[in-house]
Amino acid sequence: MAIAWAGCSPVAFGQQVEAPQLLDRMNAAMRDLDYHGSLIYQHGGRIDALRIFHAGGENERERLISLSGPRNEVIRAGNTVTCIQGPRTPTVFPSNRQQLLPLLPDTRNERYQASYSSRLGGTDRVAGYDAQIVEVVPRDGYRYGYRLWIERDSHALLRAAIVTVDQRPLEQFMFVNLTIGSAPSAADLLPSRPIERATLPDGEVAIENSRWRLGDLPPGFALAGSRRPADGGADAEHLVVSDGLVSVSVYVERRTENSPESDIAMSRGVLSVYTRIADPWRITALGNVPKETIEKIALSVDAAAP
Image (cartoon, rainbow, N blue to C red; front, side, top):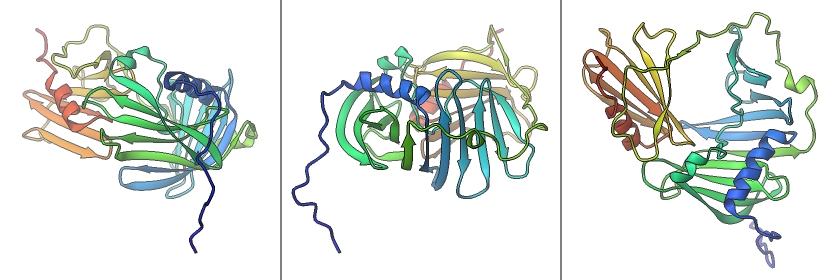
């Protein structure tokens, strides 16, 4: 039976805050708030159900666990992130303070403002909370935009989508149940099994003077760092290119007998990959950007300096 919401009007908000201010408040809230809840995450042609526990403040801690598919969990505490995948030995990574909630854009970097603008959208309800929609709009076709549902009072992020220029969602998450302002228990933040035997992955070493140059990059993108992959060979490099909001990885390594004979382009959801063959090198760029962007970045890598 259809339900007629006669006489109902859209959610009314009080004094309106501009979009850039809301984004700042959202980023602060997602670091400082205590919250826990369940969400659905649509990505790469699949839908996952997840549960997250977050303790905010100076000693920020959080734990993300899968509710569908294989039993996986990720725990972030202090300077480490621990990944537990089924029966495998847990793996510990150094933490870069990146939060575990998917599609949470970090708009604190002012560089992103040269490539994106932000504006207020409409209002909505998500997981029982009133939300203000904020749109992060790319200034050109070289990047995707964001559509964010921000809770009216706490400024918590309730829902997010990465969208094309015509607002078609490519990847999104949404809380279906959320408690804001209630700290998770100590047990909720601990891994489900002992991690004393956790292994550290082979790390990358920063390179001060890369042997590669990046030429005609898409507008707004610049080299953010160069590293030496642990398993890529003595002269392999991992270049990170960023526009202040999204990062693209470029791996340069010598060709092997298993390398493709020609350039290859692939796209799935928001992820684009472009592999370029420039004998004796194989150059692979990948990131959450349109395919035209990833190709332009891969083609911008100059030949090795003498």
